[in-house]
Length: 196
Image 1 (cartoon, rainbow, N blue to C red):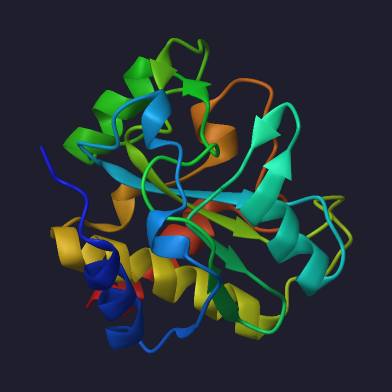
Image 2 (cartoon, rainbow, N blue to C red; image 1 turned 180 degrees about the vertical axis):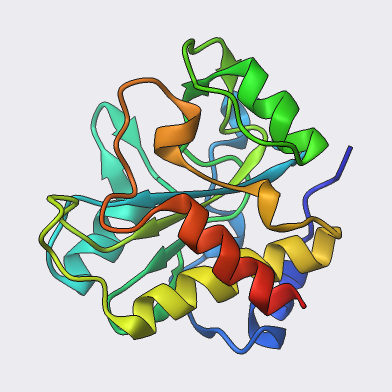
C-alpha cells in the first residue's frame, strides 16, 4: 500500500531523474479528488493522446472535455521530451479496468489479459499522456521516448517499484489500444535500465 507522493515530491523525483519539466498553472491543486480518493497508488499508466501540436495537447490534457473534465493525466510528454505537469491527485486517465491486472501490478507479476472493467484505475495509477496520433504512423522521437521512460522510472524509484509497475492503457482496459507505436515490454525494459 503506497501513499501518493506529495506534489513537490513528484516534481523533485522527476527532476532527480533528469526529466525536463514545465509546470502548467496551478497543477498542484488541479485534480478530481472530489469524485473519489487518490491512492493507494500501485503503478504508472502510459497513454497516447490522439492529438497533434504540443500546445493544444497540453491544453486538452489540462482542461479535458465537457463529458470528461481535466486533468486527463498528471504529466503530458510532448514530442520534444518535455513533461508538462497539468494536475496532481485524482485524474481522469485510467477509467475502469481489470482487477486481475491491478493485482498483478501490485505483486509485480506478469500481466494477465484484461477482460473486464470493474476497478477504478484513476485512484491507483499515476498517468502520463504522450503526444501522438496513435495511428501507428506518427513518429515517436527519441527525446520523447526517453522522457516517457525517465518519468516512469522516477515514480518507480520513489516508491521502490520495479518496471513491472508500469503498464499501458491497453493492458488495463479492454478495447483500449494506447500507447500505439511501441510495445510496453520494450518500454519496461527501458525503465528497468534506468532503475539499475
